[in-house]
Amino acid sequence: MITAIVFVKAEVDRIPEVAEEIAAIDGISEVYSVTGQIDLVAMVRVRRNEDVAAVVADKVNKVVGVTGTETHIAFRAYSRLDLESAFSLGLD
Image (cartoon, rainbow, N blue to C red; front, side):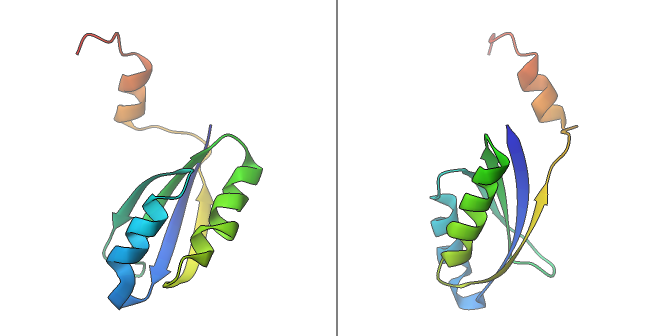
């Protein structure tokens, strides 16, 4: 599984709509509205590197209101959430 973090800049008056449209794209697992220099952070989870390009370049960048993106490919995950799910016994 390839994970990419996409920083999205959007037109201020369309941030909620842009977030919803991006969240509906296949390959996007989550979208967060954030403070700072960017408006949204989208998490891409796909099988191949080529799929990252298809999601970001062919879909996210074409959402009306997106003014720019910056994509970061994750090398390794260290989150507690990922570790807990990997060792889950399904006893919840």
